[in-house]
Length: 323
Image (tube, rainbow, N blue to C red; front, side, top):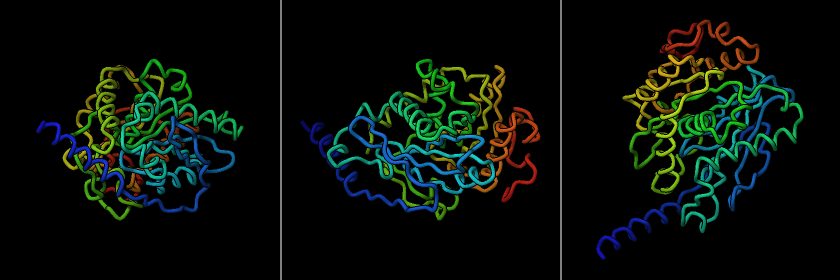
């Protein structure tokens, strides 16, 4: 009886916390929101910006507690320098895709499972291709930060999503959540070196607010670690400093990608001295644009000046703000 009372009190606290969380989204001067894509009983917001006739199309998934507008510098860099259309499907229960109060009371398995998130990525791609014929014939780069990077990896290695993975010409992953550290609370100070780069505070603040999603995240990370990465997909992996990163085990992630490199995967693994929010740094954005341009012209090694391998961010010339 005592254990039941403790569990009930904890669950009431989780539910109450989910009610008081606010949406801190800020309008940006970008192409705009494409609208909503129905996902079970929850609408998912999808954001897209870039030129009318792009040379490449970047599908970017943000991380846990982030937002579809959470990294505008990265999207705008792609759009202006790489002539890329960037599309950001918002994760369930993040930003404007947070559902009703009733939906926050209980985990929605059909929404919180990574398999359904991958299916939703396919639906977004199909909807975009139907709306804009120009996107049917351009190369697609799958990108993601942290949890979004893990979702991208899951789509690329899971046999059941082979048709989806065939859309991808390359991938750019920022501290992908291949190995996750235990965490109870997310703060701006623990996410990034400069909290002022965040448009809004992290929401949801804790994995306890989405327990099924958090459990499936851990299970998915273990599943991906047991798989082999496709050798036909050129991939840029930007890792945070393992001691500073409170959420992702970058050392284990680096080890896994080195194994894939030994198996013949075309992977550029880049170490940085930054915290978890590596994608917020100007030099990482510049390197990402170089990689994207390399995919567009069909020669990444020429554009980066280096072939697949393990590097430091300092090994690449001409990047801004590199320590």
